[in-house]
Length: 104
Image (cartoon, rainbow, N blue to C red; front, side, top):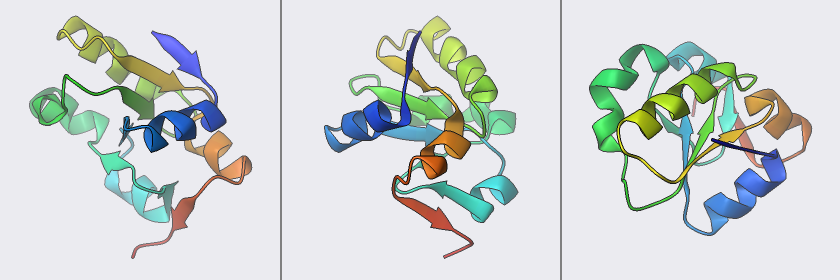
């Protein structure tokens, strides 16, 4: 699975990729990348079919480890366009990319 920078992740999302956050709800509520779809890792096997197979998926978590596991799982399920965002949400926020802090 390809590892990409936050900047590349944002570029791909702007081009139509789906940004998938696999952290838990409380982590997502604290801060998340703008536009990220939340499917917690704890629910991932049950809910992964919600994700389109015909669009690129950019996986994100806090630091990049859980999203890598989720991305590998998707590849095993036949998803071919999966990338992992290196450094996760921490790197996304540190890069100054659009993010949402606190519950809406």
